[in-house]
Image (cartoon, rainbow, N blue to C red; front, side):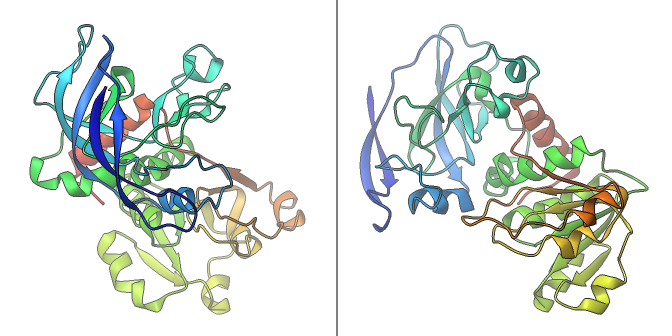
Length: 315
């Protein structure tokens, strides 16, 4: 075991404070990474404050990790000391269920092991990237191909990037598609950048007029102020796909009415309280779909990182 400095919450009310934690000695298939940058995700706050009612304390948040490989196990083949590497929201899964076999480890039927706050279904607590270093199984480590000077902007791609990239790819966003991104926060701004790079016509929905110029600078073709009924009505029945990134309860029907026949709205924001239930007739009369999406699997996360490197995309 190696002792490592970290920042941890001791309970739902305490501020993050220094804590010494232990990292395991390398297994043959492990990679040790010196953490250079770690993004700050809304999930970190949810967990530190126990807003999802599942936190194991002490909690060391952080699952948007970029760093440099400092040691590798004897069986590691893809990484060597000195390489840049990333770690996202998962550090393990069962490896034998249908989702794992399909490369969708995030939907592991037995529960993936989170980078922090332990396995979904019991087991030891895991500690995240608000720390000096981390040891992770090679199969859950990502290769970073961005320029070294961009690493701080790469770190949030490991959660915000893949959380938006995965549904955009799954619902085949691309040229000829009209795509709406709801919210311009940590997730939403990545949705705008990625959908734009995929070639879609991108409309950003926000309640904040002050964000209009930022949205256009990031790649939005249009911006709609969602609290303006006239602006919303102008987009009725016109969208192929909506990516809703808002992490607070709100009226979903206002956005479902913007979808054309067979359109889909996918939720990726995770509010601490539930959304008001949507009106079923908003779905059935246009064969619309209301869906959800998590992060992506390891292969898709690597695909996302490579896509972002090729298009110069960072957070």
